[in-house]
Length: 221
Ligand SMILES: [Zn+2]
Ligand SMILES: [Zn+2]
Image 1 (cartoon, rainbow, N blue to C red):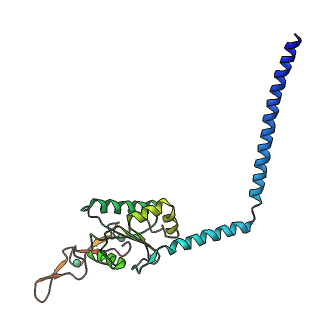
Image 2 (cartoon, rainbow, N blue to C red):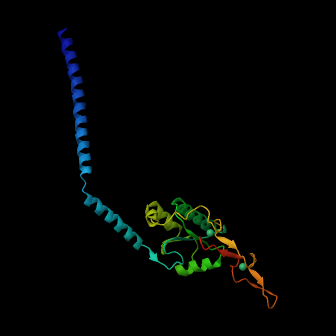
Image 3 (tube, helix red, strand yellow):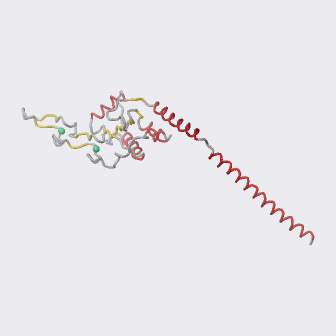
């Protein structure tokens, strides 16, 4: 009987011990959290300012990685050379990938389809100094790269930074002028790309449109 009591007492004390250990631990945790909270609250504002400065500096350094090119209409915008031709599967898929990324970041961009207008193709070749294939992306007149580079930048979170400040306001899904076709049928030749010359009565090339009888939409290309 005496032994039982002892045992019971022991059990109780073990229970108590465990309980007090648990309590002590939770107190410790609380103290720890408390200290951490206090520390966070006490972060001086000057430190935050220097952090911001660092972010700004990193952004400037990031921009330095890219070369500047004189892209017409590209000063404050995104210019994307693409193709809608499915001829080369990889090229087509690459273009779709970049377009998807831009749409995902919800920024407005000028889309220049080289298969719809050979002027765009020549422009792209002139900008890059060689006969490259699309897609090719420019942000604020800096050459960002082709599909591989752009996808990699996106994965590193850098594309988002480069697109900062690009308006999304104009990114209504529909362009008010061409309804996102990027081109309009030529009003002069009605899309035939040829007109009858008044003097000779013979067909001649229309001076208002491209080889496909299309006129570029000035708002979104
Ligand atoms: Zn348009
Ligand atoms: Zn025309």
